[in-house]
Length: 151
Image (cartoon, rainbow, N blue to C red; front, side, top):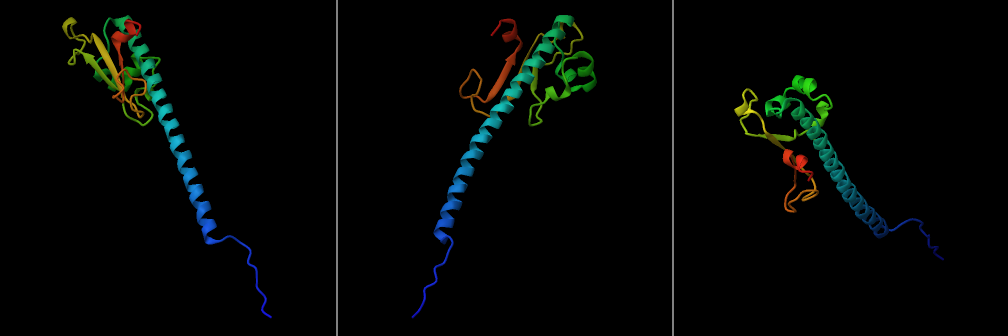
């Protein structure tokens, strides 16, 4: 009489199903976690821009004008004139500089006619429309006039 050996273990179908389920769960977790990281970086961008805007307002209060875009690119100038700002605050979490534009765009602060009278800080956000006035936009703008008008 022949004896039948019973094999212990999993079939290939069971193993494939387990791997498939683990892959789906890993994909869901990775996707959710990635969105949280985007939100955290966007929050850091906004915090950095608020800190920079506060120091720009303090500079304006002292000197009656805003710094030129070239001033903010000069490490020594920033260290001497914007004491509350560290160099890391001038770049976003991914290493991109925040965009600082002034009005007039060619201001040099050498005469009253060429003083920087206002500014706009801009940063690209990772989450579309997150925290902006325009739902189709993925940039955050911080304008000098919004600080004075309490917006």
